[in-house]
Image (cartoon, rainbow, N blue to C red; front, side, top):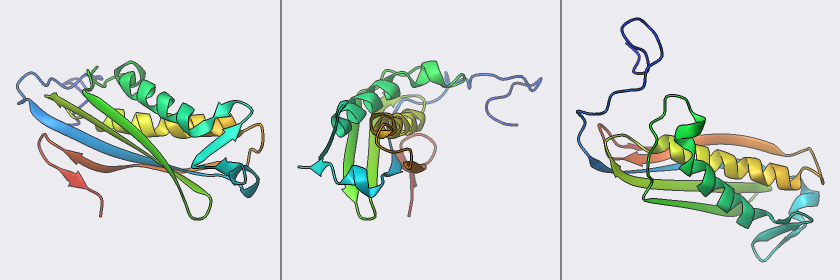
Length: 156
């Protein structure tokens, strides 16, 4: 049986009442590919547009979104995150690498918060740059690592 279905195959929130409280962390990553004309605006590790500082705004958006994950995903438990850090760096090939790490002491995992945070930060980069080009690609969003709970995970 899938964890989000009850005995009658109806959607259901997972009952975590019997689970142990453990320290849990999760890191997710999104990659945004920007065209050369946008990347030429990069200065001092920040991308400035008419809308303002792109990376700083994306970091705030990612944190805000991670805090709202339980409101956005129907069967996701509302969690009071203890920490959320969004980092942004530019790699080769015009890629903006966004990572969101969330942590909590709880009965359920926090990987959805990390994934939502990274995703929203990527969408914010798109939104702030779309006036200059629509040739922007959000290439991938994936879980990088999670700890705590039943099993740990680390992408090789």
